[in-house]
Image 1 (cartoon, helix red, strand yellow):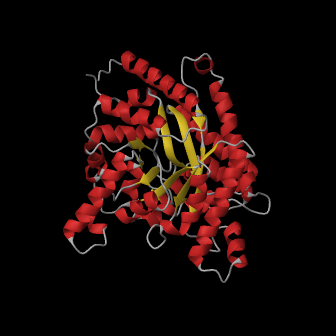
Image 2 (tube, one colour):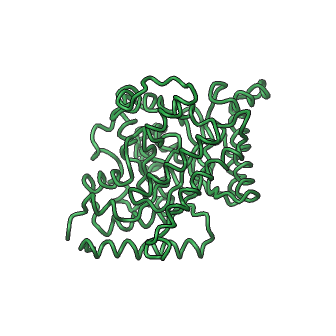
Image 3 (cartoon, rainbow, N blue to C red):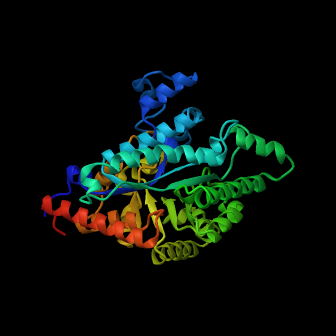
Length: 406
């Protein structure tokens, strides 16, 4: 059996089901757009920004999130949204990604010149242009290789303030006497309505809704009505959970939000974070939770580099719960989270995994293919099955060419 090399990992078809558009800009584009829009950055050079903002290591989640202040700031025009989306698709394909689900919070980009629907349309325009260019390549157009596909996920925010965006400032001013948790839920429901309309009336490839932002103190139940609306309109559902809070956050995601997938799930097995007095009760709670997730095939979107950068207690990669997820046969998929902020690619994430965890060629293949199967693919079921079959055939051809045996 040949070793799973980075070159092999680069070649195989991959997915990225958890990739924030506003965390995945090209650094050159950020500088260029900031200059054009007269937005002041901490540095005007790539080297300076890597030293001051987009680092290899961060103290905590708060420092990790600081970069979004600058990326979101330059993403307030139709042209910028289209360019950034186009470049993300091209960068993803360049490292072997054949299916991607960029996610972002449209309400952070709504302003006097763009509605939620127009924000979604401009991002779609960029992704669609890249897809058309990529799929015109001979090896794809003749059916030898699987085409590049994508679906868009809209992020609702667990919390926001009047400083978050002009949309949120307007909403707060309109509902000053409303309890803040009701405002949070109202904004999420407004987003879900817009996502459904963009999908059903405008024909945009909107495939799902996500819930992002601070977990602790901002429970998923505040957004239950929005997720019920998504659920009843067949909009797929993922939730950031267990990244900065414990198993209870994951429990809320699957019970209050009907989550099909979980973003991160880093603290799934952490009994110390369960608010029960009896240690045995905490263990039963956690076991029942992950058993349910395993049985229902709720897929966990694994972001190794990001988790190491935002979780101070993880000192080395072998401490990450991914191995325990593998041992217990949970459904997982490799993701970048943020290509710029975490300075990573899916190829890099997989390479880290095969170097630090017990992953055989067959296990790797299963995880990669399951990424395609558990995607929120925008086509119908028959089209998705055909696409996945094409991916499997292509993967197996690359295995044979590289003498990879299972």
